[in-house]
Length: 207
Figure 1 (cartoon, rainbow, N blue to C red):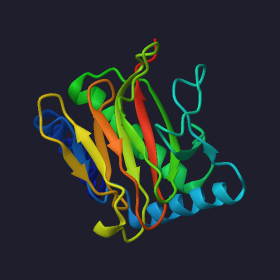
Figure 2 (figure 1 turned 45 degrees about the horizontal axis):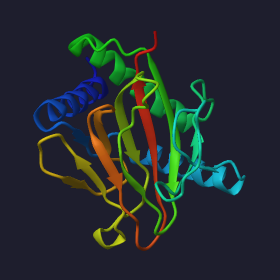
Figure 3 (figure 1 turned 120 degrees about the vertical axis):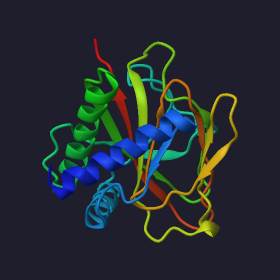
């Protein structure tokens, strides 16, 4: 096992152990800083090209807007992306899925993800990531792309585990958060000073 593979497996095990212990996993520096910078630039390019669209509620088939609940803009990442940095991200998530299936017998066989940009003062109210008419999503992941995020910027992610204490997580660039889509209610609080950017993804079981 080379050094990079060993480091990956340590990160993956930390996320899994956090999920078991605290109902969520969190890993800082999950992806190298140059890749985070590349993904951040990609999001900004998509925004400049008008390809970040106002998000809504429901699955793709039943999608509808509601800016009283969420105010982010999104752009889906192609599964066979030719962008260098998206390919690095997708490969690492693929490695994580293989590790989960091998060590935890999760049977994950699908993944989808999108960029998410929250302008200053925008938010996403408390919610679950699984739809009433679609239970394919089993685990959620969030990778933050923000540069030099400070406490006074706000924009915290609040997790509300069943029977547990609320946990607030700062959206620091390179940080990965991992939790069960159908169990962990969570909320994105407004950022006070600037936009807040990330990639949100879902590990799925497709029949």
